[in-house]
Image (cartoon, rainbow, N blue to C red):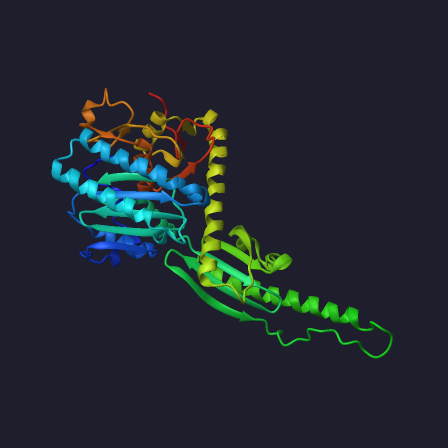
Amino acid sequence: MAVTANRSSSKRANAPTRQRAAQPRSRGDVVTADVPSALAELLALEGDGWIVSCYQKLEAGDRDGNKYRIKLKNRLRLAADRMDVLGFAHADRETVKDALERIEQFFQNHENLAGARGVAVFAGKGWLRAIKLPHVLKSRVMVDKTPVVGELVALTEAGNSILVALADRVSARIFEVDLEGVREIEGLVSPDAARTTHYHEEKGAPGQGEYRFHSRIREEKHRHFAHVADEVERALRRHPYDALVLGGIGVDADAILPHLGSAARDKMIGVLRLAPKQVTPAEIKERAGELWADASEHAAADSLGELEGLKASGWAVDGVEASLKALFQGQVRTLIVDHDATVSGFRMGGSGRLTTVASGLKSEGEAAPVADLLDDAIEDALRQRSRVAVIQGSPGFDRLAAILRFRIAPK
């Protein structure tokens, strides 16, 4: 939890959804999966007092035994305990406590969490907004004068659009999945669908003509998959999808792949074993979201490997204070965060710098206590359009690390 005068990540001038902003003045609890519309609504909030922003991961490991609820209650309790330390007035404390209670009650209803791998919840005086997300970087709770929406802005700007192509031997369906939902953009049936599907023995010796029959079936099948691949390539040229998922039945699940060019293959994030004729849009969204989350985890692991190779050359730093300094100087290309770590510290009121020790920085303004520097560091990195890689388990670095855009020569 951190208190700052304004969270500029929630006011990006060029946020693409800003033009769609409505004027939200309705009260009550609203749950949605439409990230762009929810972001537009949150960006339109002005002068609404203190707002609690909560991001919660809901991966399979988090849901196991309701582990997320225990950790969430601890984060909410910490946020409540910090209000006295941060000098909140009585009326403000009551507003924040009410918001924290609303958030805890929201998570007690399992229907609110169905079909989500993560959720962002924002609560203020008498209202709550919850947005189901394809994934969440790090579970965290923050209190500020504005909604902390850096992660939502990053998601919206990145798009997270996925092209999903499913094919069996005679038919195919193509879907696009993004933050607004699932749409079937192309229904394909092979022009060769009217084909013989059973072998009929010809006159003469037993089995005569069977080889030619099966060869014709194989040729028709590959011609069909090539036709589907052409449609996929055309879809990728029409729209810059961020990822491609292929699917089908059994061993033919990735049968389209050999017919695709290298550019399409580079967008591949996985293969699904699904029957094109029976699959539902909800299943498409869930399974594609799982592959996207897995790809994000692999990318985070790759960042950790890159960190090890760059530290010796001075293009990366390891440790909280060194990483915060690099972030303050705008050096960070990728911020690497230990998901399970917590580091208290300060934000300097004049410069906005995050630091573990405020002594020696009096010229940068008054030091405001920050409950978890790592949570605020994520927001600062997203505002600078840096990548954020969150590592769970044995991280192999000291809580916070950074891969740099440039080096600054020591003075």
